[in-house]
Length: 245
Image (cartoon, rainbow, N blue to C red):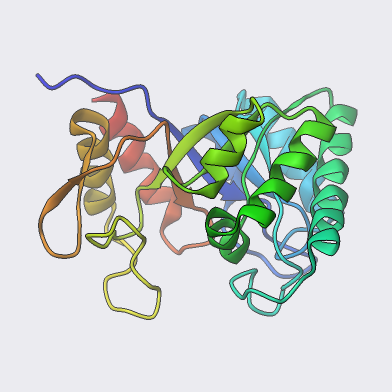
């Protein structure tokens, strides 16, 4: 039998705000090892954050801050032009608020994971990556989640932070090991079995089958599921079963 790597399962949660409901956090939480809670700029509101933090603590799920660009209209998936000092301030504002709310509930922040466009922008921009790690250092957050081999990993390791290389169970990869554009067909793995098969392959072989049908090496520490995608609970159940198999 192939050796199973120690890969955790995380999901982006807490993305509902006011009367807009996104995903089913309560149903997803039992399948997770860690969650990334929206900090209010792409999704989430104060009450949603409180409720999601409590859910995570009740299920023993590690809590991460999930800051983004200020972009509710596009769910944090557009990249605005921001000077470095403004980006730093926006990150500090979001993460410190979630950290305080987590402490008030009796927990501690386990990690930070940027959201959406910020995730990809900071991974390619050393100034943005440095801003992310500066906030982590100032707020004493030890672990950063991000794509393997980019600026975020470099900044984290340089500053003495722990880096968790992250992949996705529910997204298709290109041969470059970048995620397939959401504008292209097949970008998401909607079928639970397909997502479970990709998770199993990553956990047992350290490889992923890309859009060209070929397998490529991809060593990860954590796997993400998108809580806002329809059918997320069924995929989480299937992926958890695959990781336990």
